[in-house]
Length: 343
Image (cartoon, rainbow, N blue to C red):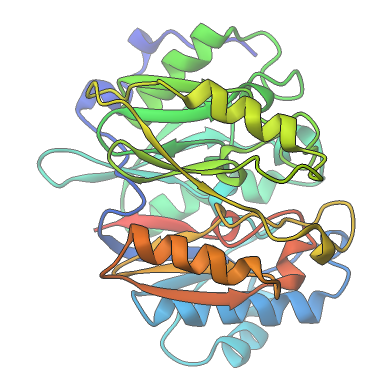
């Protein structure tokens, strides 16, 4: 696949759209009900965890759960009242990656910017229904949809809403996604698609083979000029050198506004909590809601450390922890299964 000439197709950026930061006010959250049995060792338990995350988010803001028509009755029973359902064909349940990137302009207009979804480099099949999901959401909401030819996922970027995008080398430059694209071409496409001014590239994590090192398991903007990033203090951590390389790459970087980025370090959950090869133990993989943070809990002492870090970053927010052992088994966390729609 080769990149399209942006002059041939109007991009979100060319029309004045940009993607707001996740911590900006939301209209609602989108999620997708679990469907792909091969991902989850215990589908019933996974659905219970999804319901707990959805109910926690609904304490702060509206939520719409996309669900296959044949699963709607079950989802309604498990989710309870107060959560909207959107009946639509689905293959899988990662709203961050298959869902739209919502963008806004200075007049308050909203649109949907869509990457080309390929199930993380064709790791799962089929994925055609998920590849159509972003456009289905845009159609439901009456929004203009912009389609990018870049094979990418929403979990591969974090934005500050002021022109800065952070991503990783191991993901969108991976041969399983965009083998003919240069870093410069991917950079330009991200700027056009998300309305940015600067892309900061981190090394990523080649050893994390489920997403090929999505940035949402490494670092996330928590304020303009401030990034929460996984620390590298544990000498027993087999990925310590990977985390240190990402820290080193971000150190001294400036954002699109010229501010030097301040890093706040956070540990991962302890190695003792890992169950299976894909288990996600990142606290960076959290989710910001209106007036709160939905924080993953793993049942280890580092849960309390992470909570204190989030509370210090957001002193006026409520930090709402959710224990997600069954979601973690699928290789992702709370951020991976959510997508914000800005107010």
